[in-house]
Image 1 (cartoon, helix red, strand yellow):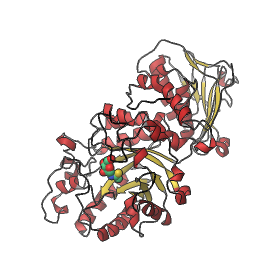
Image 2 (tube, rainbow, N blue to C red):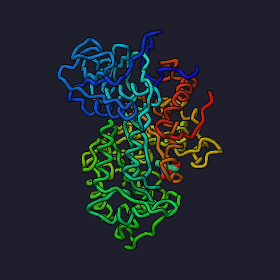
Image 3 (cartoon, rainbow, N blue to C red):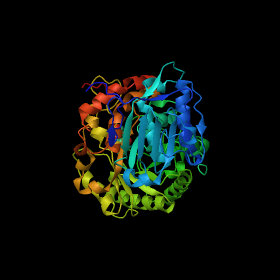
Image 4 (cartoon, rainbow, N blue to C red):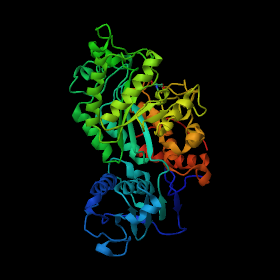
Length: 512
Ligand code: TNX
């Protein structure tokens, strides 16, 4: 299959392309019809359309906006786009799905929620020529193939993670990353905010954490941190794209930056030396010290205050410098602390060693497709304690792995390199079959030991994130013949010009 027209990533649940039907055409007379209730989605769409078409694309927010495309309601013409909230769709498309129809009569997106309309907008975007994504006005015709789509996500949690601790990326860079994630219907960005090399979020009650602990990164660069305003900007930018920010404060290991900023956290009373290497597993909070718990209470309270989303991640990975019995007690107490500040605790799967976690604590699994050591047991422990699971199998979902031996950046500890095909061809429910119904969703983490710039991020994230996005959004392979590598690879190849227009230089090559 070569260069399919009207193809969309991630694959929609159902798509019909009527043979020979004339396309929808966006013109200088086109308008967006929508109600005020979805103003954020209509202005978002208008902004995207205006930038490359140069058309004015006014948003018309009349009440009782037409109930069908091109019926002539509200003077709509065949060149207009209508965004319509319709709760009747809910049974068919759930909370985040949508129905999209394009034809010579107009473009119509209906959905029960604004989020659903937003995802419909992402699909509509991909029906136009790639030049739609350019940042300057392009002179060409703007046709979208006639098609009808009914679409809904498979998983509730469709995540990416950015490690801003090993190398710092400022709020502007994170917002640009959010813009790209939105295209693929990703709805969570997990920010790994603290690690041995850096503490990246200002904590008002403990200013040294960010001011001292943030002034470093891997290889000794300047680092940096988010002020409260910066973080609010990220949260807001994400919310406008229906993306939830999940902040992570990694404890009790991965804490050298905190230990270097606050002398009182060290049993010796002396600040630890800053760390700019890439080893893991050497630092630990003093788990039995009430000074540690007073610090954690301040931090978790302030992070929870700045987080509108339901989840707060407290890490818990690779705490090799913490005594095992202390670790067990620590993660139980930390989960309760997070819950006491009104958030659902999330932790890496190691924390499942505790049977006393706050009920409902979510586990993030990062072992392999075939679980190593006792990782399956630890992951299942979250489910037994009323929690669900986020799956990030490192051998296929870790975006910081190299593609192959020729990749200039990336790591390879997770069973070697990860090709685009390997990133695509895995099925979440096969990893821990006993917990298949407890899967909240999947997440692709980008650790940044070797990642220094936006270009580095793009190289490792794209196109593999699209593979993970399709696993998270689209139906299981058993339910559609199109949910297969050959079909995905053809759609990815057709997407190439869109990466160019977006200014993204992807890393992996795809051979079909
Ligand atoms: C393991 S995965 C880590 C990180 C590293 C990553 C590098 C996990 C929970 N911890 O500290 O950055 O490997 O791939």
